[in-house]
Length: 279
Image (cartoon, rainbow, N blue to C red; front, side):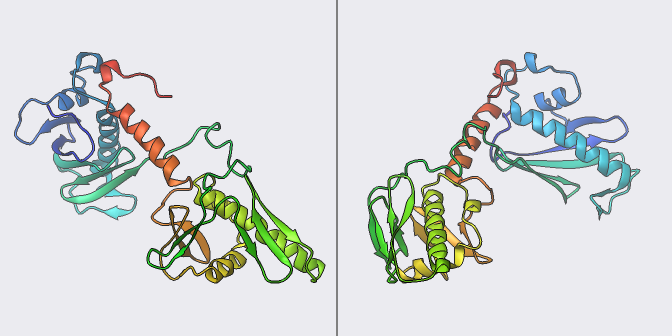
C-alpha cells in the first residue's frame, strides 16, 4: 500500500455493525488490516505514525457519527441505522488532517506544535539581538531593519539606542515624571518588538499599552501600517490594534513552529516497526 503522508487522500468503507474497515473496491490494504487488528505494527514494513493518527481519528469519528447521526451538534443527515459509511481521510500536514463521512465534513484535527521549556527559555529575556545590519525604510517593500546600533531621536530631549541585547532610553528631556515613564515604556516596547522581529519572542510580549507608541514611531520612520510590513525579515500586520506576525496562527514564532513541525513530521513518517521514541 502507499504509505500515508502529507497530501495523501484515502477513502474507506466502515461497517458500523462489525466495526470493521474495508477498501472501496475490496482490495487488500495494510492499513485496513492494521485497523481491523489483523496486522501489528511490528509486522508491517509500510505503516507509519500518520496511520496511527488516522486509525485513532476514524475510531473517534465513527463512535460519534454512527451512534448519534451528528457530530458536535451538527446534524449529518445520515441514518443512525445505516450499516456502511464512506470515510475520506486527507492528511494536510503533520498537524492537520480532515475527515468526511458520506461527503459531509465531520472533523478537522489540528495538533498544535509545542516547544520544550529549554526552547522557550529565552522568551522575555534580553538575549542578544540577531539583526546587526541596519536598513532604512524601503517604500517599495514596506520594510526596514531595526538593528544593533540604531539610535532613534524622539525630538523631546530623549532618544532610544538599540544595544547588543536590549533597548535603552537616553537623555534627560524637559518633561515630567510621566514623560519619563512613557519614554521608558516605549523603550521596553521597542525592545520587545525587535526581539519579536528577530523571531526570539512571541508577539504577546509587546504589551498593549506600549503598542500605540510603537505604531506612532514606525509611522514616523515611514512604515505603512495599513498593509503588511516587514521588520527584520519578519512579515507583520496590525490586527485589532496589536502587532502580529502575518499568517501566524500560533503563539510561538513561525521559525520555531516550522522547526518543531518539521521534526514532528519526520517522526510521523518513520515506519512503525522501527520508529524511535519522540524527543
